[in-house]
Amino acid sequence: MTGKIFRAILTVALIVLVISLLTVTGFLYDYFGTIQEKELRDQLNFAAVGTEALGISFLEKLRGENYRLTLIQEDGRVLFDTDADPQTVENHRDREEIQQAFWGGTGHSSRYSSTLTEKTTYEAVRLTDGTVLRISVSHYTSWLLLLGMIQPVLIIGLLAAVLSGLLASSMAKKVVAPLNTLDLEHPLENDTYPELSPLLHRIHVQHQEIEIQIKNLQQKNNEFQLVTDNMGEGLVLLNENGIVLTINTAAKKIFQTDDNCIGEDFLTVDRKQDLHNSISQALETGHCSLKSCRNNREYNFDINRIESEGKVLGAVMLIFDITLQSEGERRRREFTANVSHELKTPLQSIIGSTELLENNMVQHHDIPRFLGHIKKQATRLLHLIQDILRLSQLDEGIELNRETVDLRSLTEEIIDSLEVSAQEKNIHLNLEGNAHMQGMKSLLYEILYNLIDNGIKYNIPGGDVTVSLQETEKNIVVSVSDTGIGIPEEDHSRVFERFYRVDKSHSKSSGGTGLGLSIVKHGVELHKGQITVESEEKMGTTMTIVFPKSE
Image (cartoon, rainbow, N blue to C red; front, side, top):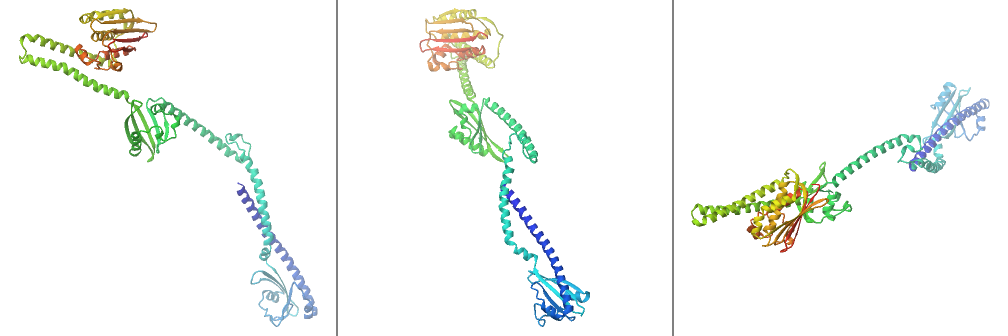
């Protein structure tokens, strides 16, 4: 700003200086020229009077240093000249001032030299004898006078420049000082130049608009952050160079990182090559999907390219936990394979026996044995189908009517129905305690029946099965203990899987379907309860169920 003020002041000063110089010079030049012309006429009149009286001898006595006198005859021949020999001077008949004098009595003219540096003024008067007396004077032209004033003009210009600089610096400080102290955060509170009021008002309006936009952006950012942080799926936003822009809470847990990764290359978050290849492929082709494991869980990484007006801005990565789906798919395949196997085994046995009977390949006394075998396998097949249908109902969450169930009476009923099979293996059935609860009676019957039946099937001859019922302030606790073969510790977590058997040979000999404990687990979950296993190999097993009393 100081430079602009300096240039403005200097320009104005120089313009004023030049205009003033030209004006004064022109005015003075005209003024003194007019005076000089008057004096020249006076001098001519004086010389004319003397010449009329004394003749040329008077002119010869006049020797002026600043003017020139010339006497011309009617034919233009010079009779006398104060500065030159009349014989050498050319004819003056055609001179403007001479012609004017011959015709009008007086004449006047001005002529410039060939270099235009001098101007000569002529005054002429006709004498009584017919001759013309002329007087002339030379002086510098106005341009030559101006050229002669270059040095003082330059000095004055230099002084003007110095004064302009000082004045510009001072003025700039005074002008800028209020501007430097402007409070742009509160523009309407400034006490400054009135000319700045419209600007400050506009800044105030813009501040308000910016504040509103910032609040809206902050609100949208908070909403986005809130939504993404509460997503169950992982979300990662990357720019076109693979730099992390945003990562939500779920993604941080998956990659075991924190907010410090924002602004860093994704390589610092995850170094597995398969995922980085997928990101590169998505940036090139637009989409890529990958299934990969992290922290013993399986995830599906869905990566899509982000574009705007044909320009690649980055990529968005959605991470879905598909562990349960994968596990469910694995179990479905296992379940299908097991069902096929379990159904095929009794059916093959039945078909084989019926073919032997149909072809009369069985002796008469063996027919009852074969028919008994067919009945046994058909019964096993029926139980298997019933258990599968029951599991299907439990999977669909079908609930029966709830009522108050006397667990002791229900258990006594089950013990009575299993007494025969218990006596066959010399198993002692015991019941302790008493409890009542709200629940689905038929489902509770199945739960207790399967647990007691398993306690009998997988027990040792002469062993015990003890059912304990306990009612606390908050829970109903049911435990079924046996003194049987037990379950190895590595199988504890899988005993509730469908068709899973700890001892497959013993299970088949006992006629189990492998679905009993799965039905138990589903039934307990429908009652919002939890079941736990305590068992050691050859030391027996205890199944404990805890039902919340509110249920």
